[in-house]
Length: 232
Ligand code: C5P
Figure: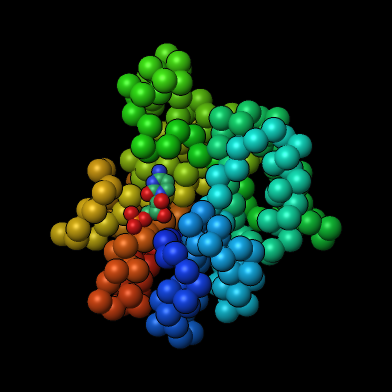
């Protein structure tokens, strides 16, 4: 599986995202579309960006009963996306239903990765509010293993957790990692960050990079720098 940089297109309208993508010529970055853009513009935004030649990670983090998630995934798969995700907390049954729903008639399907615990969930909150009485790192490892056993392709995690995930779930189990910043760059609201180069050393398979590219004076140059540092 080749390493790649996924650009988080956290824009609130189609006009903004097209303006951003117009900077790129022949280069067609793998892009992440999140809830804000998808809910604002609907499935058409996915079709349009796909038509422009980009691979798409649709980051909608599904979590519902297996039947509902399976049917929703069938719809998303028909949009010709390349990667999507669910919450592992939906259980192995839900994850298997998601995989089943994603299968296309030609046998292909988008990659499916799981969210273990959101990075906004602290160990304290997880224990006090979700009544999960274990260390957070143990929960992340267990949810990753559950996802692997259900047949998923990988998890979203910090580059700092990529090694542990690979140890627990195998080298081929994908780690898709946000929280990446250039050396000396702004951290924004990300607490624990690593550089693209460090993420590569730690074994990340895909890095998800938003503002360091989308807010750069020269987004194409920032993207190329990221690819050079991460992919080599
Ligand atoms: O702008 P920035 O590089 O921080 O963007 C990172 C992207 O990855 C955002 O779309 C953010 O929502 C997403 N993300 C994250 N941390 C997670 C999961 C997703 O930053 N644990």
